[in-house]
Length: 165
Image 1 (cartoon, rainbow, N blue to C red):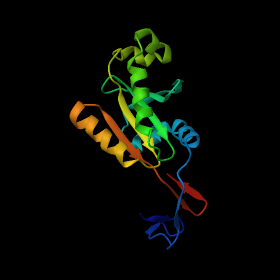
Image 2: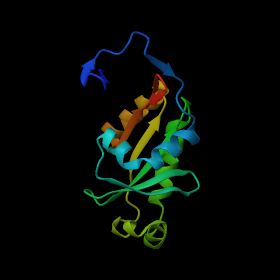
Image 3: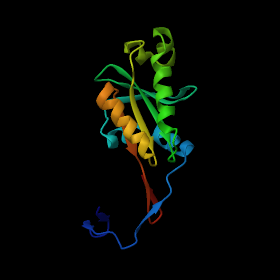
């Protein structure tokens, strides 16, 4: 990583000790940050076709998005810390979304009228870190059972007065 020196308009190595690792945000802060800046966050994850439709639309579902290219619902679950139940919670949310009928989907957001009721949604899990067994299980579900699941670990660095995610 290089720092942009605004004075000289050049790229320079950051000062030794300039980047300081901080604790990951808690779930509520991470959910608020991601929700308030969805387009930038989705772009950073490499998922620019996801359109955020609702934050906490139903109990147990953190965010519901729609993949405009695939025509499919996407459940986004956020966990600030590493907990052994993080994958279980994400799978529960995906099951809840898959259990919605056409009217319930459209009641959440009109874009979901294009989603197929009962279809397993894509699952995106964002956390400060993961329990190793959660990653192993997610990989197994993807490889052996075709679940479209992605896991992203986020960390926070401080550079001067700025926090970087």
